Image (cartoon, rainbow, N blue to C red):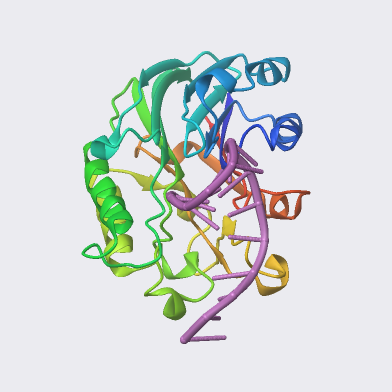
Length: 267
DNA sequence: ATGGTCGCCCAGCGA
């Protein structure tokens, strides 16, 4: 059986409801993980997703900021909404589902952006980001003969040189500083996670999933970064069939600044 | 080196 999973920082699920329903109609992933829904649970547009064939929804939402949601065509069960760094932010949601005879634990993350100044001594947002990545070490790629794990989301870090438009020019820019990139890579490998986007599309090919709203012409300047990620436990990596980064979604009418990424597995 | 744009909902914060 084929199984597909999408992740997208949608930057307001209510404003971009027409875009996300069109995404589901055209690409029909089995599961979609959203970040930055910016919506309290009680205002989440359940009905529109239900009508699109996605009846199973798990949400961790708050008013105005952050928020993640996992929506699915197949049954999912909420495992945990973990309050990383104990700030009350809604930045994580884990669910479990079945695919190809495996129980799959799915983590949906929205890592703090970290502000502008990459110094934890003077910028509490950067301190928070580093602390968050450290706490993520507790989330490991659990697997067995009957189970597997997936971790997706907006991790707000572009770890590799080919994940940014200019490695040299971004070394002191939050999202690509060495403390972040080595921290994330150390957390990933230490936890047993495989970077599926880079398995499918190895370096030195550039991959971007985000382009700033502040560029006059995002496409012409193409100053992107790979901030969104799809990881899995080692036992799922041989089942990966492909990764699609929907670059064209950045050119949609009233777009998110992030684009969807879709992983397809043969289970 | 600087400023540039969004979305939350109406002021300023977070990205």
